[in-house]
Length: 142
Length: 149
Image 1 (tube, rainbow over the protein chains, first blue to last red):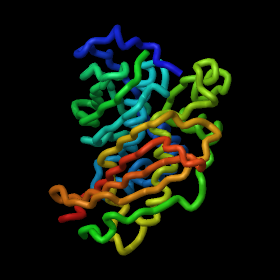
Image 2: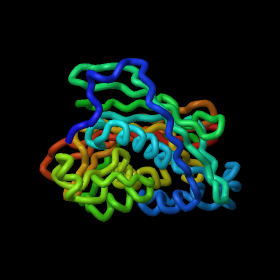
Image 3: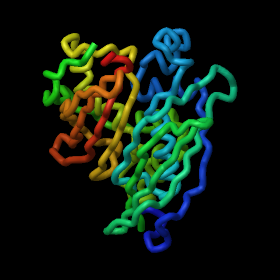
Image 4: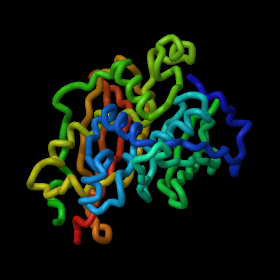
């Protein structure tokens, strides 16, 4: 197990190009089943509105999983992630249509640590909203 | 309603081991839309240097909250689950989780605090194998919207 990105080849400030991830109602139903989080705010519009939400919202962990995918696809190995944390700063509202919502994830190398590890600062946006804040992954590079 | 601060410091151990299966990892990978073959195919995982199919980084959420779930449902805590959203999540990994792992979770409510109109509750989950190898520590903060209003 090893990352395909070499520590010597990355610089602090280097950008990791943005990737768009689509979130449709079907994804939330699948995620509810796979994760065991059946909170109705993630699939029942009627219920979501009765608790003051604008519509169904994505599981925060679904959004975090997309940020994780962004990191593991860049690093080349899921086993290279040694620390991964986020704060959920805004909701991803998922309308009941064919488009759903889009989460755009991008990254920057924030710091080079010892032992060939780097800190990646992540940005995740849905529309104009930053849906994750303080999103960081520490990755073991080759 | 404010959450009951008496719950801070309480620890909950999983009553049964969680057996990580290739089928569950594949289902989870499909749900997050990730086609990485190391999540789906044992041979691809081995070719990449792993002993078996690898779990995606956020996979521990599937089982790491089971042991504290009972506490969150305890009427004495006063949590209105309908108003709960996820606040923060962090994982520190000692090694990846693999299919075949048999895992135990010890969860501790480390903090309950008020932030504006909301109540925040943080759980730290220590995930180990049945042999006692530390695999991952997960930190989960939930927000009860309007709980402090």
